[in-house]
Image 1 (cartoon, rainbow, N blue to C red):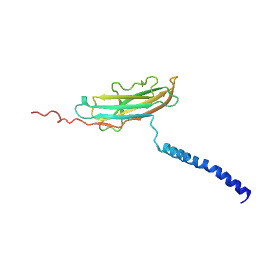
Image 2: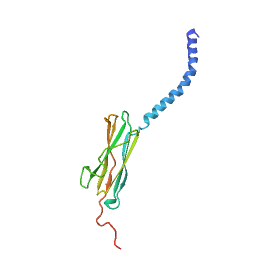
Image 3: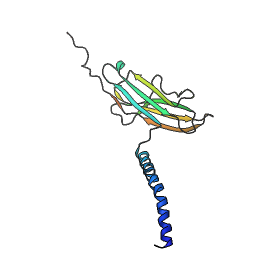
Length: 169
């Protein structure tokens, strides 16, 4: 064995404990990175149809919408605005309709990190409904940092049969 071979062997022997100690940590880091890459990120906003009541008279029919948003980088305030759209039988497109309590911007209180808004609309005529929720994030100077618009799933309100109703004794 030459002098160079001995130096290489000594260097390998000195490095071996460090290399063996670092290998599990490196493997753990790779596993963590893979897990983060495959874990779906939490959405910054959601709009969900949480309830669709279709039974009974029109005055008893309703739909409930939940909107939720979280602060994004650079924002200090959050706002939501909910609209109701309707598609009647024979129509091909949804159209916006007015409903009490909808259409105005609602703002989370300062310091809120997750804002949740729950809206209910009653007295629904026979048609298919969907809510459209606008989200916006504002900075400390009231400038919009981010905007997003989401639709809920559909709530179909069937026509009430003319023969339906209370039966005579």
